[in-house]
Image 1 (cartoon, helix red, strand yellow):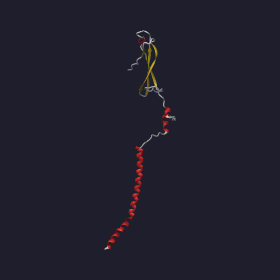
Image 2: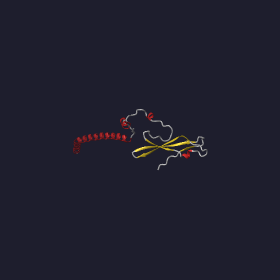
Image 3: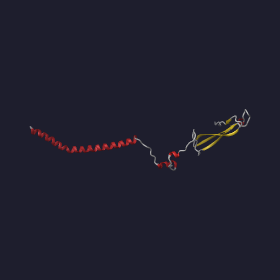
Image 4: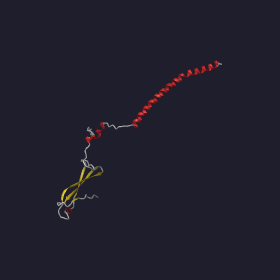
Length: 163
């Protein structure tokens, strides 16, 4: 009876020994898949960090030459012009300008109360940008200012009405 059981065990042992090369092959395949999985996990982590992680814009200094023709090496604080006062900045000097002089009518240059003739004391300058297709023009409206020599009033011409 023990011989029959031993024979059954011997058959199982023979089958197991016959499967040893298959088991070894499967073990090698498993090790290679684990290694590949680790490599792919690292690549995924790098790509996710590149996509969603902190990034800083890096400018190739050679690209700046495309816009300016040269690279200004001074710090930004030194390159910025200090703007005095408040309000809007003036238009660049290279733009074409058209002057529109606004003056008082001759009868408005005489003060009604004291009948003294008003004297020119200066001009108010107002620049407005007008976009004309294929060009940009800055209209300058110069409004003459007049004052009574006796100190009664100051008058400024009204802008011209454009239709």
